[in-house]
Amino acid sequence: MSCFTCIKVLMILFNLAIFLAGGTLLGVGIWVSVDSTSFLKIFGTIPNGVAAQFVNVGYFLIAIGALLLILGFLGCCGAQKESKCLLITFFSIVLIIFIAEIAGAVVALVYSSVADSFLTSVLTPVLKNDYGTNADVTKIWNNTMTDLKCCGLNNYTDFDNSQFVSKNNGLYPSQCCNSTTTTCNQDAAQATRMKGCFNQILDLLKSNAAIVGGVAAGICALELAAMVVSMYLYCKIDKEGSIH
Image 1: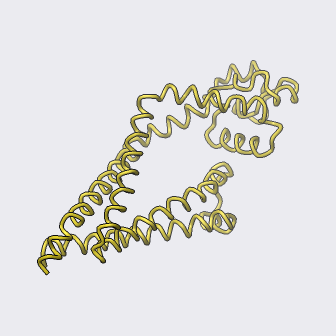
Image 2 (image 1 turned 180 degrees about the vertical axis):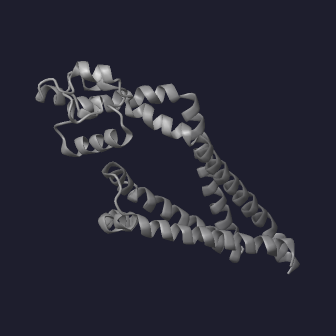
């Protein structure tokens, strides 16, 4: 078996796996979006906050699954039919994804402080105006604060002069005092010094930085390998065709 044929077979098998993975993710995403209750029964009893956030990824899974289906189809058919058009399309899509990932990582590193300020400016008004008045917002924040044992985005001061405090005679959410029995007023919240949810999420990410970094590096390596192989086949197709 020639080197070209071997790489061609590997390309087909690799993209067949991508195609099947995409189909699986697409199916799971549709299931989660359409019938989340039956899907979550597989995992037994899980915290409400985690469940709500998990269900919300259904549309994300659909998008990723559809993208993987397209990539798998282009790569598999491009290698099998030795189509330069399909191969260069596959290469272009993977290259765009790779560049977007690198750009996103650079922006996250360079402008992390700007991102913090942006999130604070966007989410703090939500806490002040919608928490306690909007049922969906209140439920999401209650579940998040309970599960992560945090208060607000930065700390209890996010609720200062908020609709919730005004409607509850100066009382803050019980999570800000880490208690359901103590009257959680401003003094109690200040004395408890609960961390903000943003810091809790950052701490969680930092504790798993090695795993996240390893997965990201593995994905980038696979993308680079896919681009190299597809370009190799693209450049060799005419030569192999003339030999045969």
